[in-house]
Amino acid sequence: MLNEEALATHRQELRRGTIVLACLLLLSRPNYGYALLDALEKSGFDVDANTLYPLLRRLEKQGLLTSEWNTEDSRPRKFYVTSKEGAALADTLKRDWYDLDSAFLSLKDDS
Amino acid sequence: MTATSSPTDRYVAATLRSLPGRQRQDIEAELRALIADAIDDRREAGVDADSAERQVLTELGAPARLAASYSERSLHLIGPEFYLDYVRVLMLLLSTLVPLWFVIFGLVTFADGSTAGVAFGGALYSALETAMSIAFFTTLVFAVIERVSAVRTKRTATWDPSSLPEVRDKRDRFSVLIGGVIFLAVIVISLVLIQTVGAVEGPGGARVGPVDSGLWESGVFYIALLIAIASIPFHLLAYYTGWSTANAIANTVFVALFAVPAVWLAASGRLLSDDYFRAVGWPEGADVIAVVVIVFVLLITASDAVGGWVRASKKRRTR
Image (cartoon, rainbow over all chains, first blue to last red; front, side):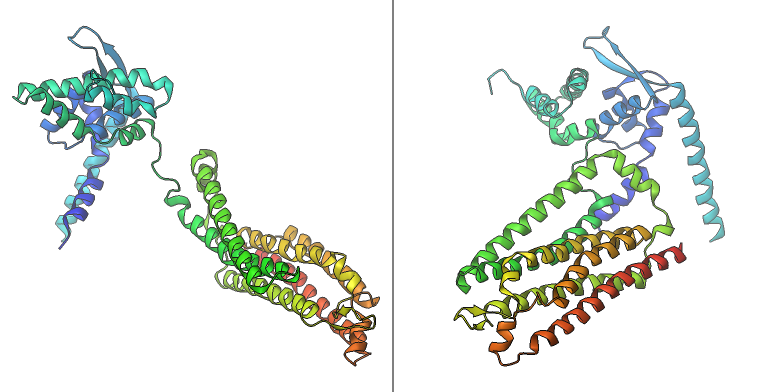
């Protein structure tokens, strides 16, 4: 039997890239870090705060997200929104995801 | 730590400490808002203020790890890309240079008039020092390579299957290299032993060894030893980069640098001490041994020089 640690590693490996895609899709509407974390969890994406926050900055640095400080609310928050490049990447990644999905389905048909 | 600094303040300060200055302000403002949002959320769910803060900070994890994630800095000294090379180079250097240094240091100290015990202890201490320096500098070089992104991309970009070494050839060369090191050590040890311990009483009452005493004291043997030791890293380099025509030419020059003076010394009768051979009752011994030395030096050096050319041409053919 596979031990728990190995199982967790395999699942983590499989999910690794999906958080980027989920962020790019969710941030087509501007949102801030904590609310995004909440939205991801509610949609069924399991991600840690200490992974998500640095990831948002990396995506911003790559030009896939843009950010703006919103000072209208009770406390100033940094809002992120998907850029044009980010949206294009999201389209590519989404297509890859569906391709993989049909590839897995065809594996199932053959066996 | 003052009474006013909250866990959040301390957490943020600890995270920012290792971040580059230009990012700090922005990350601090965002991090504080994120932590405050998370705490508010928990308090709304009925958790008291202190536990809410502790829970949120615990979930964010160690500040150093979070900071490394923000700055995209590696948390290792030498990563998987270079680790195997690092171990290989370190092992090779330690396993060849440390024993060699031990033997040479011990012999030189002993020949210099120290007792065997003192020479042994000194050599042991010096060998340990050498091992530590080798380990430190090898690690330092690899840690720097790990952090210089230009080297990393160059390395990953230039690799292709044609740079793979010949399997049989490689093993041969490696054993030849190690064999050469051991051979050199044996030669040096026996030479020093014969000259010092094996010395006999000469005509003037002074002790003479088989090697001409003027030559022995002139330090010419240190130069010869230096050339021989210098050839180790030279062969090591060629071993890693592969033999080229340039290597073969350099190797030939290197070998000639050693062979020409050695043969000249032996042929002109300056190498050996006539007094020694007369004292041991073998007057013609000096001439016989001189011929043996000449043949020996020529055989060894010629085979080394030719070997370099053979490897270089083999390398060309496989390309």
